[in-house]
Length: 124
Image (cartoon, rainbow, N blue to C red; front, side, top):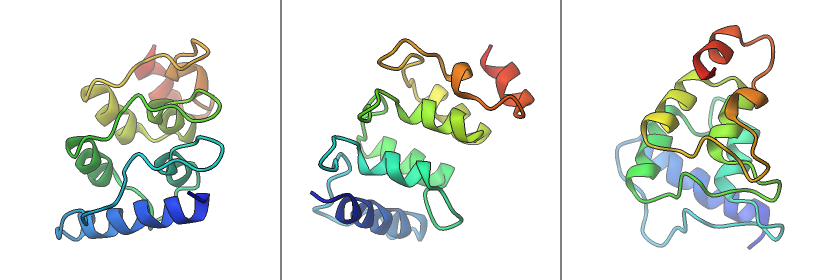
């Protein structure tokens, strides 16, 4: 599946979930691009006001998304959220049992920008 198609499907799912309609049938939450990166990882990396919120992440976890899915670099959603400085996402993912090490053995705190002191302190 192409990256743009995978992201479009996850984005549509996010919009429907956020609107309370629920996720559409037939969308593969685990869709990966040709490099093996889960589409949801791309959406979180390039987050904007229209991409996944904490509520969306919580909904897809309830729908069975693998919290420990890794992208081509070995990063998990938790590591991407930490790198983006998304405190609420990090709290949710930890509460849902996300793995705290990536494929390289890095911890989420290793990914947090130095400017995000509150998040760095919480993850120590």
